[in-house]
Amino acid sequence: MKSWKDNLRTIEPYIPGEQPDLPDMVKLNTNENPYPPSPRVIQAIKEFDAGSLRLYPDPSSKVLADAIAKTYNINNNQVFTGVGSDDVLAIAFMTFFNSNKPILFPDITYSFYDVWARLFGIPYIRPALDGSFHINAKDYYRENGGVVISNPNAPTGVCQSIDFLRDIIEHNRDVVVIIDEAYIDFSGKSALFLTKEYDNVLIIQTCSKSRSLAGMRIGYAMGNLELIKAMDDVRFSFNSYPMTRLSVAAGAAAMQDTAYFTETTDKIIKTREWTKKELKRLGFTFADSETNFIFATHQSVNATIIFNKLKEKHIFVRHFNAPRIDNYLRISIGTQEEMKYFISELEKIITDQ
Ligand SMILES: *Cc1c(COP(=O)(O)O)cnc(C)c1O
Figure 1 (tube, rainbow, N blue to C red):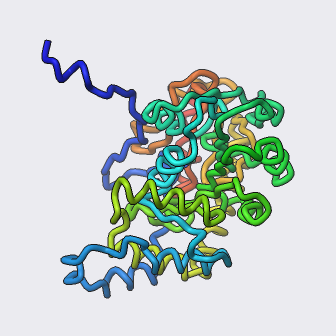
Figure 2: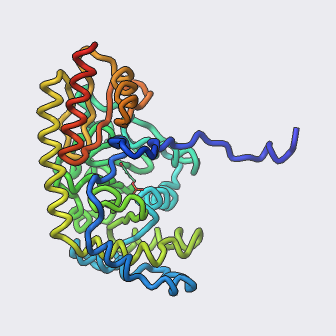
């Protein structure tokens, strides 16, 4: 037995959705935006000075932090940027969850949270969502080392109200409460304003979904400057140049194009509402979604069967082999044309069973 094997850090990793590359595929499995990034992003990349890449980027990513601050009407020292919100969340876990009390997040939520908790040795408890996939607030009144809530939640699509979040925060003034708003632009109910009232609330958002930049890897946290400073200190003890010059330029351009952002987000919401009606007609049920995906189960046909039949037709959706949700499919919202094609193929599969 080689002795180095005794000292390995072993961990069961997060499993991302597959990234097939077929010319005719309809890809509805990783909640990407079906529309390209803003024309201003494309222009910024075309005009980008590649020669500047010999230089390290600005460690504070000021141009991007300024663009985010301006968008949300906050100061740039209230913004922390990272390589996707996955990076931002990981740094937040490392920075804020250092007590020996367990952190709390639901049993059904973003499946990266428990991976980070295990990686960093943070104890955690996952109170069960109720039968309609809502959080029971009382589960979060107990003593804990921190709270993480994805709102709207993934993969359920359920959005809890601001009053609900306020109640959870009121019961947790001594720990950091992270609200992961990866999908908030499809619901319009951001809790960002609560960061002005509560110094222990951190809001995390991403350019991956509503701003069509999943491939560029840009995420950000917003909160009071002490929270942000603490995260910066951890960040600069780990990697001092996380954001590339190109991602800063592209991200800033994306934040500045509000008109395009509104137009594409509205289109996705409209298609989502159309898809809900069609899924109901075909016998699916689901909690009401306020995201760019629908988490649905069929009254008689098994999810795995549907998943495999769709895959044969090069239509990719997401299936989680986990307790309570293994008969559900998470269907990302594509363009209206993609969803029409998806529904027509789905209808054939359902009627064949
Ligand atoms: C997609 C997603 C993220 C991470 O997205 P990034 O691409 O890393 O910004 C974080 N949280 C939730 C709930 C998500 O669904």
